[in-house]
Image 1 (cartoon, helix red, strand yellow):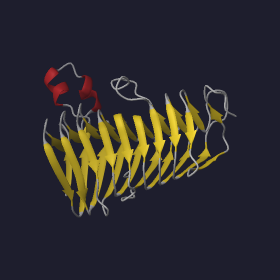
Image 2 (image 1 turned 180 degrees about the horizontal axis):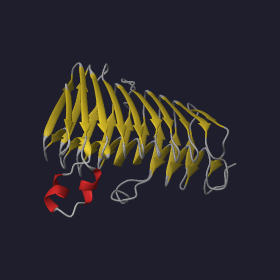
Image 3 (image 1 turned 90 degrees about the vertical axis):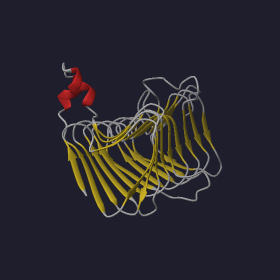
Image 4 (image 1 turned 60 degrees about the vertical axis):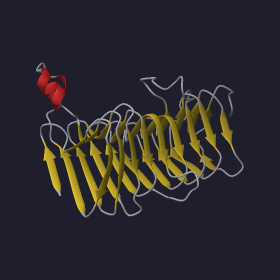
Length: 264
């Protein structure tokens, strides 16, 4: 199945819907909208602009699964976009999701969870972004997704970023993993944090490897900083709150630590 749309998303989920999308075989979704339509003086044209190949509208809950390959081409802006209070869960052991985007690979205004499957992102801006909680893997390590970011400005970004299991490899030009939210919508509800409890995280970047506006908690799994900046406020691990490294965590970082406690 090959769907291309020049007026709105190739596939859209309406507001406050509960939807399961099952991918079988090879499915390609392409957004061929005109990026200028987003700021069009024609209100009708601007309102019709989705800016994503897969658009999940406000208040919806989407479960993406199957055993096929989903290719998402976000030529106008984002690959996958979810609205306010909408959740997206990617969960299919044999599911493959490849996203290429002119802006964000997957941009979620609320929560984004990748439980299983193979997800590859190439994005001009954030690869995976959640305004609230971004989670990779399961807390009981019953699933092991593979997430690969081949190109991004910031790799993984959310108010809270959790890596519970699986394999995550990030290449970025700015922060590879960032606990931040420019909107600040959930700052009163959640503490900024990067939490790695299992699996493996490998990053290569020009700026911070792990950057948290709050805490960094490394209690399990492995974290490897292949490359990052190492000067002033930029380091392999950069945090504004506290850094905790547990006995079961394997941390490989030769690019320094920058935090309020001046830890060397």
